[in-house]
Image 1: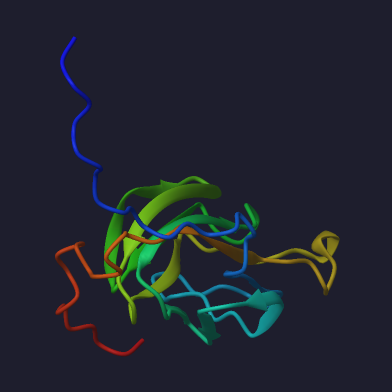
Image 2: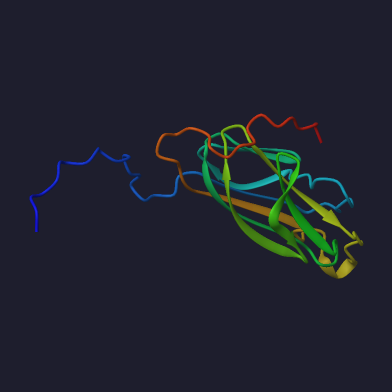
Length: 156
């Protein structure tokens, strides 16, 4: 066995393990087919995620876990969009989840297809759609490496 090699470069400063960037938004309104869901209700929101209407803006680059759902009485399928583009593996019957890499300023939206109407047994306060976003971590250099930061996205 040879001599020990030189000391390596210092790695990234780690996070303390606490989850400090997350958002839960939902709606109790009827859903409109083909339109991004409007999320007027915010449950708990912390850190660099800003919900505003039909979009949720991610203020920091990093990896995110995203859970999304639509009430089966309201929609036949639900799809997550990232900067107005469908997310690979992000189309489900009623609820789904993905992990994605995002750049600071990216936006998420949830769209539904096959809308019905929530009958009286749903109750007037039933959640018709929801979105939960949890930041998992950040790239070491903090830069954007996702290759889509310059996409143009029309307002919805």
